[in-house]
Length: 167
Image (cartoon, rainbow, N blue to C red; front, side, top):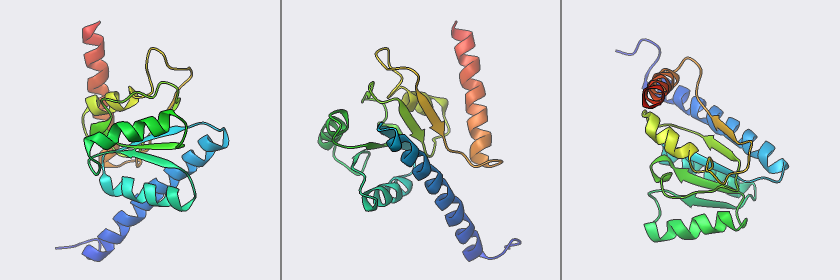
């Protein structure tokens, strides 16, 4: 039984929340590109990456992409386009954020998460390298008071606790 409206209203609400997240990410991208810098955007949801890619291409922003929609052979090609400065935005699936390094890029936006600290840590490691320029900017776009935010806080606490234990 639906108490807060029918399934269509729930779907409309989810779309509005998703669109708000995309708008925030695009706003961050605009500010980063205004400083003539590149940005890596990591997402756990292919639908979100598809939507971001479409909007960025419509805006005339050169984009490269590494995720499960491309063959592994194309991943290196896409990474090289970004490293050479031929694209301004590198879109990545969060599970693909383990084998490529972009140490000359200082901006990372995490648009959606998997609920483990390891994937977030791997994603931030794409720009946070020994040879990276400092300072780095890492944004994680979450919805306030959402299940996602609660899970991120829980994973961050576990990640901090594990780091303390290892020292």
